[in-house]
Image 1 (cartoon, one colour):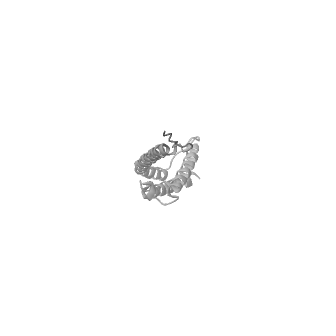
Image 2: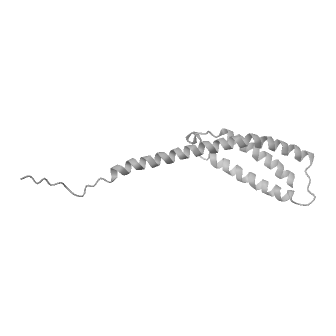
Image 3: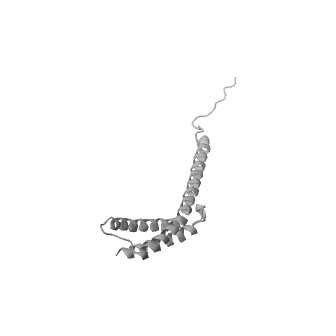
Length: 127
């Protein structure tokens, strides 16, 4: 049972690495749904990790040599994946901050011109 989970974890991690490599660091260059696919892969992977964590906690559990080979491959993929995801996270955060600042500044300028009063009129009282 757990062998299936280990193989599935490896498969999902490979797919996650492939999808993360395809994501452009500029948000506007990515196609619709691309980040959602990445999120779904993360969620499925986390689910399998949870199942394996429960299994490892049982008494008498031991990894086979095949499992250890798959785990070693997972570690290598994880080392490649982690900096990639961190860079994307940092770049997206920077872009979101830039968008937020732009919105804030545009509201400041728009607000300056919206409060012009037109309710009264000026009457010249010349004598």
